[in-house]
Length: 148
Image 1 (cartoon, rainbow, N blue to C red):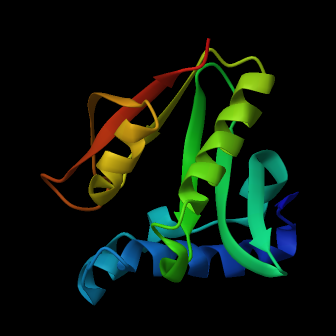
Image 2 (image 1 turned 90 degrees about the vertical axis):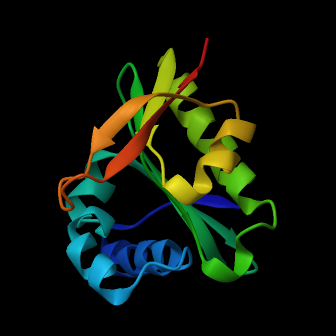
């Protein structure tokens, strides 16, 4: 079941984001450096399309879409214990639906490098790189999917 995130869930969603990122084996120093990019603010929840996927009252993950053309997928994160069980696809399809229903002809995002295979299976392609704001020389894959 999908539902809109509530402003008061910002701190919880920030924690989920950081747990999900840490799943990929990043060390504590790296996580500390990139913490700014792994923060969900109350303002983001109020302004953007932030949706939570729940099952039996448990939060499995969430996505955040900034509407526009192209739409921007700011976040798509799962609790680590449910990664690889099909819930990422559910979140992805919901995010695409939100962007498409708002009239976007495409959606772009910076991908977690370890999740590239997932995004490619979802039909996204790498269209460039985005330099890290925190780590000199590190680049994130810039991905795009057409929504026509």
